[in-house]
Length: 577
Image 1 (cartoon, helix red, strand yellow):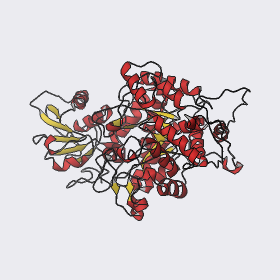
Image 2: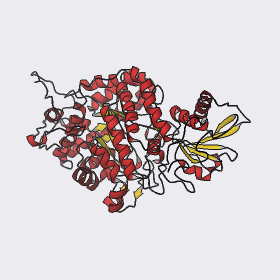
Image 3: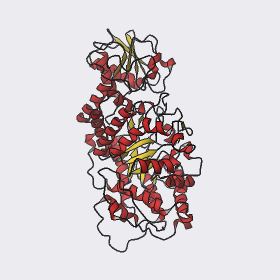
């Protein structure tokens, strides 16, 4: 195709004053100028290359000079792929890759499009983001490590030789891609209930180390959204709570933990998804706050994450009326450039939320890609048609609807982020689920348990216990049974004092009227409708959360948590002021 076969090159002028690197993933904003583009295959190199600069910013700016238009376009794309291995896939995975990219394997996808990154995905029926995950390529840590090694081998053969950005949504709680063989953190809301940022940082450092061991170098976390009074069902326990100041400290701690482990944190969903009951996986939610309320209620956690060195900020598909009414933030230059870059001084990589979500699919994939880049995004996540997105970017360079300086700026930021990761030692898989990591996370879980009604000392129940749960929660029920038995509580299949578990998506009809204890393993608002003498929130159904709960039920530990969101008719805690 003529648009992909122009044989010009990219030339970039870089003022030396802009070369100072931050102590985080965030690069200094580049100041590129003109050039042009590519053959459809990487050009041959006839002269030996000089040793690359050691400084990631310098290296990125030198590399971008060598890239064709097609190379540049590929570097701002971060799709998903089908298959559990980079080079060996079954027929179904090959068919999926043919549909989205005209190739058979994930490695071929990286090579064909000279991709900047790839996101690892996984569908789960209890995941509010499941609709955007049509494939599953995470199974076990060992499988993920083999997959990421193969992807990096493919990326090493691309022009510039930069590492591939490999990301996933490992938020923990209801959005957790790798669920087995790792130390599972509780939800963000559990950390908000614990109110101990040092524990948050330690837990997220453990999580980051385990992601790095699997070869994942970008985590699309933490969620920096602050919940409004009406809540947000799609965000819910993914948020640290309703207090923007407290959330800011939690976000800062999570970012520090991840970044120190060598994994780039991605703040989401900018400029804030917590003050709407809409779901951007379905349509364009409207956030009706004024600009002044946004500054007070939503901005602080994002500021804190930026200050802590987050490598990426994810734009939300949100109509934030106080900032740019009628325009989704992802496609708003006012929000993504004037606010995020100009006022908040973010210099890292701006990444879109999934481009296969309805608000981003109102245009053809190529046009949507160009609109997102022109707004100020640097990396386009999960384009629904990779070829169309790549070709749309190249065509826009040619017709001038996308300025070359804007694309080169985006690619320079992406490459800087990548080169900051080059040469970093990768932890061994033996670090996963280690005793040290278990202890770090268990402390946070123990600090989060909240009694909203009931005794504050001694056992919450007496005599034998029967554990029941709403539909689909058998794994959590069994985990609590085992934890109670380990805590010395007698548990029987029926006839005991009932401890009833509810969780994500449950309603009043899922409550058990006769339960002595009702436990919410997600947002605690449902507890306002429960009639049990004791009401407890864990905010999470992880094994370590349920172990901490068992200790409280058995009277072997107090419940120091305090609900980070209001619950109608109940105090934030019956035991903690």
